[in-house]
Image (tube, rainbow, N blue to C red; front, side):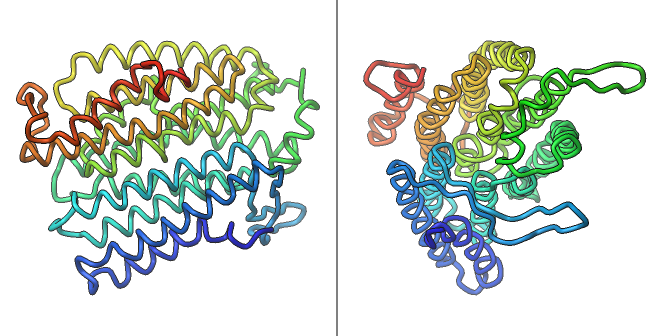
Length: 403
């Protein structure tokens, strides 16, 4: 396995420990190590992308994590087309957020703590997408949840921020409960949690059923729907969408990272990765499509009546994620992932533009008090306009091609 792949997740992890332990002594310079680490990680992700483009894939166990009887769970890397795209999204947006935060978070208490949490968030998402088994996916899944709790509640002395952090953490536990049950059924029926082994034998469970309390359930459909429960929570779809708007209580760079590149895209990634299992159940795919279409219209309608600039963009995120679920639900997984890719960049640009406006307005977030900013913030004006046109699907921009 190419050695540079190790740098992609483990440099942000090393950055987390270094900044958390020594950041207080470094003070205003504590951002240097995390920024350099994530930029190197991004360059390695680019190299991995072109490696996959050349037809070279990686699926290798690194070491045995859990060994008990016949049960063996390893930590390993799977680098294929889906992984390479996700690596680019996570590392590129994370790099931009790290650099942007130098100015945005300047003078904030806990400056070093913020950067250590950003590094942990980046590491968690990278481990989630790089894993070659469900256990490693679950580790990254929960680590992303922990990181989001820490970042959303960064201003922990502010009651609303602390409450929002807890809300995001607790609401996601409901979805994760179904996700865990799905993993349990996968292990019981396949005897393994390794992607390659599960997907290779997936056809064997077609037509199988199981009974609980006298009720009979179709096995492939149950597994797919339980995995989908986890995706609903992470990607803020109805009815577990309630945590995402409140996540705006965190610093604006965190909003960009959560909404564009990390936490909310994990649900779409899960369905795309497990497409073999979902294809076994047309009923489950129909549910994914219907829920996606419902959420898409519902969230877009709510966004129309919001007055907080960050909440407007937050509800648009819920709606755009629903587009991705619709794509996956109709079997167009590549289309869903393509929209995930394009959405990450124009949504990150929108949120970072929001941060610029909020700073320029002295932390005012109500849109009714905004207007005529082109004269004072021309760069923000043009970048925000470009992102808005892209999310609207204007021809020639990325949103047009993915929508």
